[in-house]
Amino acid sequence: MATPSSVRFDPDVLERLSSFVEQHPGLSLSSASNLLVDEALRSAAHPLVVFSDGPTGRRARLIGGPDLDEVIGAVHSVRNAEPNLSSDDVLVLVEETSGVQMSLIRAAIEYWAEFPDEIEARIGRNKAAAAESRIRWQRANDLLG
Image (cartoon, rainbow, N blue to C red; front, side, top):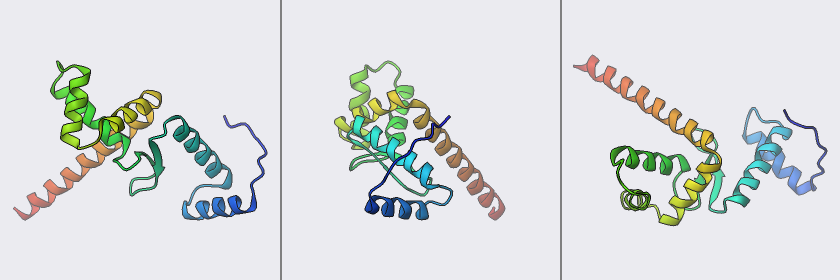
């Protein structure tokens, strides 16, 4: 449960915050403030992680790299396909197949270790969306013969 707290913003900050709220329907000044402070604290703890908007909503990303759920999904895929690989070999294979630098892969894993539910939920939503897309594609192909 949220605890009420009074915060005073500099006028320029309040103007930028108000603009952010206008661009994000459904957010209030309070909820946007909470979101942005939480993201700033997470980025301070995980300096290679940033947050951005995208077609599927706001998400954690690696600086100059992909979304964290994509990297963690690749780690899961390698581990599932090659369960006998050592941890280091998993990391090397993810690096080789994804093109993501080892330091960024490790940063994604460190963030995931602190916030696994967030990343796993996003992976689950992505898998569900991909499955729905395949079903629609198959139906369209079935109709066309």
